[in-house]
Length: 165
Image 1 (cartoon, rainbow, N blue to C red):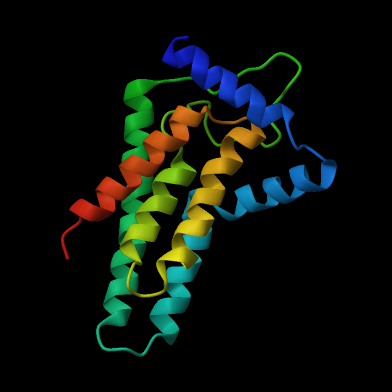
Image 2 (cartoon, rainbow, N blue to C red):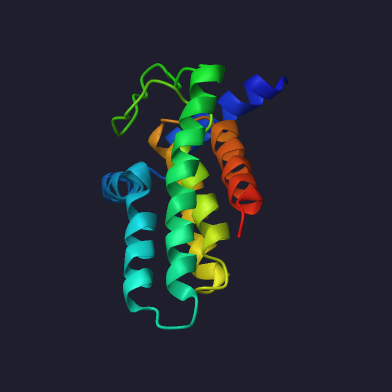
């Protein structure tokens, strides 16, 4: 089995298992919270306003900058790669998307960039749990192949890691 075939097979499993209506609705709502990094930028804003530790405000704002940059860099990669979103017969996507381009997942790029950038400000589990949830959510909703979310996670982590302090 080729990697492309494996990618498609895992996507089909994600789109056909555990799909009660209430879970699909919850997954779609969760997905909307991640559009353009809204949840991460909101977290950064609240953190910058409320965290009184020395240097914390600057770290929250740095993290917000990384999330915005990750979104832009992600879109640049999408324009170069030009991979179309998945299309499965009889299994339409459960949410709309901003673009028809799939690789890499912007939700994952921004989420893993945020998880890395905000590390040390709040517990890592509170950052990586929602990032992983976005990674699982995107194929579940039928808008990304699994390899799109893995690439997004790697890209986001790399962006945050490479960002100057």
